[in-house]
Length: 262
Ligand SMILES: NC(=O)c1ccc[n+]([C@@H]2O[C@H](COP(=O)([O-])OP(=O)(O)OC[C@H]3O[C@@H](n4cnc5c(N)ncnc54)[C@H](OP(=O)(O)O)[C@@H]3O)[C@@H](O)[C@H]2O)c1
Image 1 (tube, rainbow, N blue to C red):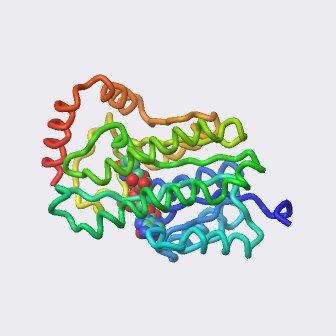
Image 2 (image 1 turned 135 degrees about the vertical axis):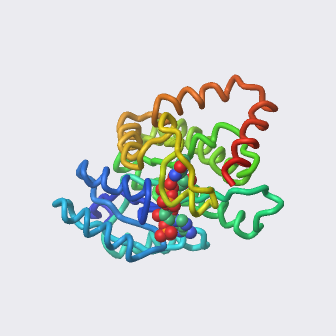
């Protein structure tokens, strides 16, 4: 039965920003994509836009991934449509600016449910079809994954998890024919900033990439079987430097930077 299913690229957080750009990128490269996020109308508009470029119209699966049972519901919906992932793109995520003891606890736990729990569940749920189809997993982490982040503590920690988990999975799944890439963008102007409570800021151009540039890098990184992909030269240098910088200094620097963003 499963052999008759059609392979698709499952993309979470496709209703805006980097996820929408990734959906366009995968579709432009001939992948049939399935779009997941909470906002059904935005997903439907994206599906129309992709279909308008002569690609197959993406299936739209509205889901709140922070809720338990979301992965199961997605698996059943795919099954009903005769689809199975050959690529899973875990992009949905959000951050919150502020000291952890002052932010809402439930919201910070919901961040872990989405950025960590759902990402882990979706990375593992379709591993059989990923192996059969020699496919891959693209997990969106961040340059925040490389350092602790006072002022956004849970967000940085969640992305450190994504990086660590994805690198280990890369090693485990490589001999089984499945590629795993952790995509680690720096600053990307999207809805992320408003959701996180970041003041509108003038983005330093050298550290900023567009969602489209990041999507192109991520797609290429996965195709080339890269373990970690940091889009942009300056970001790549910055993440390398974090390995050598004393932790105390790094904590002070990031603390000061996040205070300036409120
Ligand atoms: N922008 C940056 O500077 C930056 C830098 C590094 C890493 N990143 C990472 O890149 C990823 C994409 O972020 P973005 O910048 O594109 O932000 P964005 O424009 O806010 O997009 C976030 C996406 O996640 C979806 N989402 C949020 N909560 C969800 C939930 N409970 N269930 C299902 N989907 C949910 C949103 O859709 P709905 O609201 O419709 O559910 C939206 O499609 C995130 O993992 C983020 O941490 C961003």
